[in-house]
Image (cartoon, rainbow, N blue to C red; front, side, top):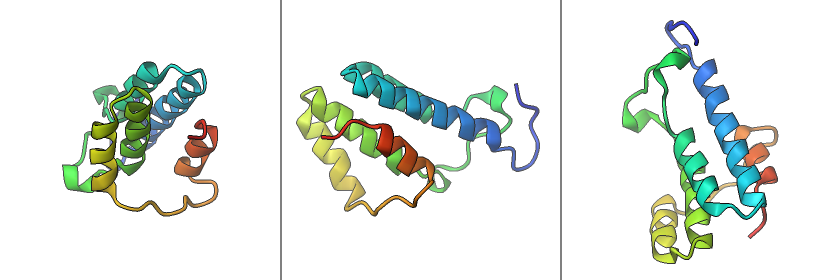
Length: 110
């Protein structure tokens, strides 16, 4: 439990990173349905982590969307995957050392 305070985002950031890295481990093991569940869990904002969910337009979930699309593709749900990727548009290279680069490095190749 993290006590709430203005700008308390560390607890939520740690939760998100843990869920995404667990999703990567599931994906490497070929457990695509489990990986998709972990990606969905990474989108959550549990109350006990010290920060409330901001307005939807202030939340960047492009990484989660990208990983969800890959899970759906591997699960044979190609149309859903393409719809998500179409919404995202082209991806930019991840900044070295960022959460995105660490998760993508752990994620299995296509």
